[in-house]
Image (tube, rainbow, N blue to C red; front, top):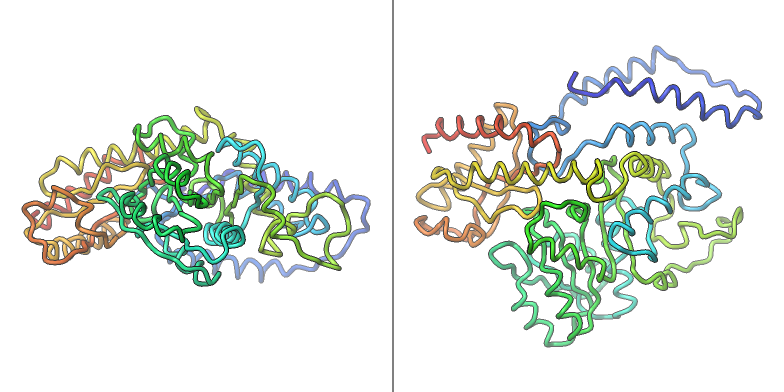
Length: 450
């Protein structure tokens, strides 16, 4: 079986124990048409086959990583209660679990005190960070690199704050010279540092941005939605590690447990270094907060109803695999990084391909070598399709030619962007599958007469 089924029995055992906590209640009759349920479920199982195998190591395309079995089981178990983590009235146990789980993430970044909560994903986490920035730096500009996630520009428009993107260097990181020129106008309120860009996995030079902050007094928001968990690994290059070591100096951090945190979708996290920013969330609710004088999560978040199941699943995962260097969780991430380095080591010296810079995290970017950028872009699409025909699923990205540097010195530059192949090697199992992935790529390259 390629899908895990062996853990399903544990769910039934856990449900029996959960039910014991409500034995004092009178029985209720629940009528279920089991045959009808069965028909619908089996139809879903058929329809869900119309998907790429995101869970398999031969899927090496977009940022899709299967949740850990403990996350799946804990999420499902909580649905028999279906807690809402807006107020303690609706999610007592799961709200405590959320606070504990978020504190573990904050501690991973070196924060003993913080304000934070889970949210639906990186977009919402970044929105809250920029919303707070707008309160503290009203009317001032939000700045992010051209390779930062597009959501920052969109969020700025929603918040009615000015936004400006900054060019990148040849490694897809924010260009410090361009940023320095912009900062001289003294109208920048927030700089977004991306720790793991969506396209290339590049890491902005956070240590240099901190030096600029000391001169220009802006808020520094770290968008670590993709790359944040790599702070736990010990196989980053020196420059990248230097950036991770500085994350604790940021004003706010966004991270997505539903990416590298092994969670189902719908689990992002926003953290603020200064708990005092909670004053901006203050609101009156005459019908919500009555069961406890403790902090209700709805009092420090923009979202109202939120799935307590997400908190339960995250808590369970972190209980099973603590967020510590050298632990099981960190070891899995290190394998993802090793897989990227191994694939890059096969592609980079091969004269049939051109590569961008060496991967900083676990994303590899490359393209077939041809006589022109336009032809390379066309063949990248052909390789993408040919790989899928062999059950190897990659991704495509349109990136500036400058990211490929000297590799393109003998190539006709007939357009400024190149369509290239992109692989997110997010699963620890990818490390053992690199040879097979490379064999498929080699066969395709021969077929295309590269």
